[in-house]
Image 1 (cartoon, rainbow, N blue to C red):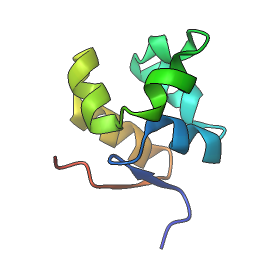
Image 2 (image 1 turned 135 degrees about the vertical axis):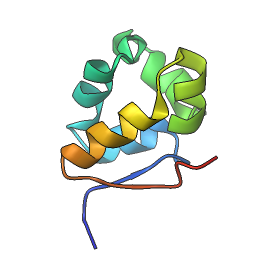
Image 3 (image 1 turned 180 degrees about the vertical axis):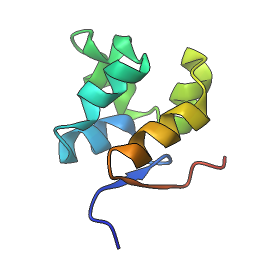
Image 4 (image 1 turned 90 degrees about the vertical axis):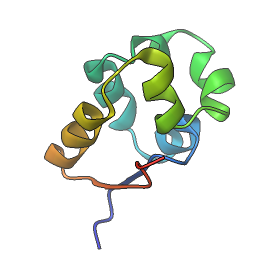
Length: 79
């Protein structure tokens, strides 16, 4: 099993706290609001990647492909 896992059901803040590469990848994918001071601490506690993709209008398949290409296993992305 891959030690680098992105679970689309976990709050974004939780993933960011456990993986220093997560936020830069998210910014690269278009989630630029994650850089706004306090955004990760507030909204990031309740929004997961499934909700974030919908809210930002970012193609979930593009996000999945990017994480896979960076060596991540991606789970729970189908809701």
